[in-house]
Length: 202
Image 1 (tube, one colour):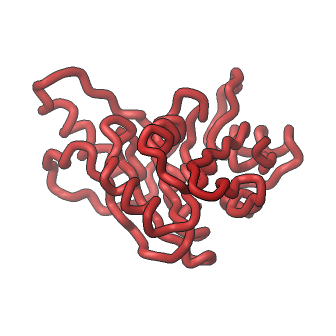
Image 2 (cartoon, helix red, strand yellow; image 1 turned 30 degrees about the vertical axis):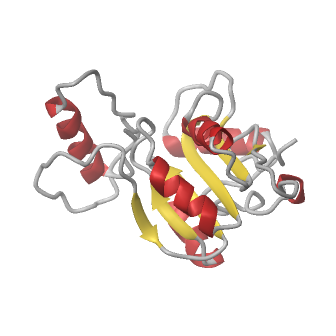
């Protein structure tokens, strides 16, 4: 489970504690809360995402604490925004629906892309042969020094000549002609670095 704010984190910890059919895990976020009001504790429906904004053409699938940056980008681009909540089980029904009604998908996570939430979306898209390009935005597969969220984001940005997510959330990652799928086939595009670095997919 990937909480997007302090209330979601509480609900997910509660959900995991009361889940009796196997292990559960919450990707506990670093940093402080954003001031979200705390709702009464209740178990969340497993594997169900929440559509935060309905848009057109582009759908942003957010996993975790970058939801405010994703929301700003979705508003600017008139994109659909989804708080995915769960890495496993994924909301496969919603992903299939988004793939059928949008031109492109973007996954966003503050974790490593390789073996991460975006990779899970890629695997589902390819397994179902969904003809939609997918761009993954997340952390590089390398050791990252300790620091606050802002410090780590700044270090990743400065080291790759990019801009902070607060300044340019998802900028440069929303379009890529090399992500267009061939006619009648599914293509998945992979971004090797975090949104802060803005390196194009291969």
